[in-house]
Amino acid sequence: MEIVDFSILTLLLLFLAGFGAGFVDSIAGGGGIITLPVLLAVGIPPHFALATNKLQSSFGSFTATVNYTKRGLLKPKTVFEGVFFTFIGAVIGAISVQYTSSKFLINFIIIMLIFLFFFTFFNKNLGFKEKISKMKPTVFYIIFGLVIGFYDGFFGPGTGSFWTIALILLLGLHLKTATAQTKIFNFTSNIASLLIFALSGLVLLKIGIIMGVGQVAGAYSGSTLVVKKEVTFVRYVFLIVVAATILKLIYDKW
Image 1 (cartoon, rainbow, N blue to C red):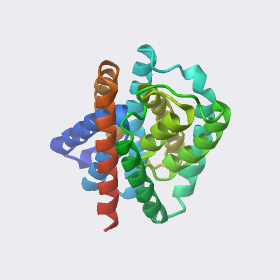
Image 2 (tube, rainbow, N blue to C red; image 1 turned 90 degrees about the vertical axis):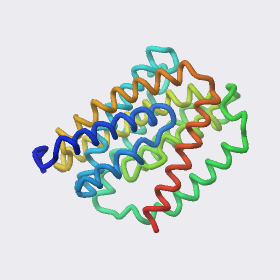
Image 3 (cartoon, rainbow, N blue to C red; image 1 turned 120 degrees about the horizontal axis):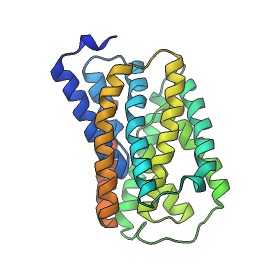
Image 4 (cartoon, one colour; image 1 turned 180 degrees about the vertical axis):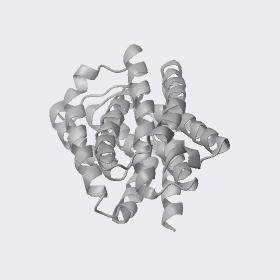
């Protein structure tokens, strides 16, 4: 499938989808609920859409990671273990999805996201202050790196939400710090999955790059906004994105 198959208006739509996803994803995750439906809507087959989505989203997650690091919210060296095990989990997930239907996961993910939404909604002070860690960081990063990394490589929707809540609840991180760490793990699982999909010849390079340019602009804008805004703003965006992900999954199912 070549880029000549698409009109200028379609390419512009893909670019704008990348920008919107990059902006939202850098704040609260969930950019895939924008880009993946657009890729499918313009006629790209599911496995090609999933693979190309990983390419374009890598631009955004990398941009957000760099911006958060420069602005002091993220120290990559302190989360090396999480990056390592997330990479391994995502590789396994990306290999598995090519041989397995993801449908059996949907019901479980919908239930988990609904739980996360209401838990966050009713705990209004969640993530406003740092708290004592309930797990040793090494143990946390091994377990959640493998599990969430696998999930992102295999399926994806809600990955950022799961990372953010886990980092707040179990490591006691501030919401902004958790958001920043989530981006480096997202980038890791995106790259790991992308490598597997590229080896399978499923990545549409030119389309991914066009959307990726939009992702860079959106991710820079969104991550800069997180640094400047209060935690309440990030919390509201997080709730909106989780709710939108739930509705999207339910709509796709029925």
